[in-house]
Image (cartoon, rainbow, N blue to C red; front, side, top):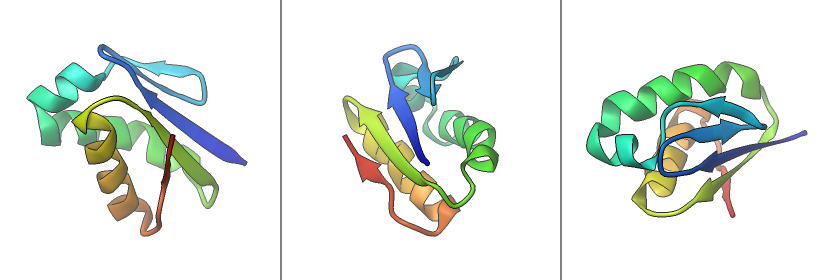
Length: 77
């Protein structure tokens, strides 16, 4: 299975599930916002592949933190 995390300005989606943490909040409160988002999605990922999409620095920041947590590479769209 492939999981998709898509970052929009005011929210992100994880496999279609809306999470109220978006690009603006991630770029403003980097560590807190990204950690909250990852706390919600990492337990649902398991060993499956992950794709991260979106615009701006938030996509790369979330992707790198996610790789640290999962101990493996994620792909970017």
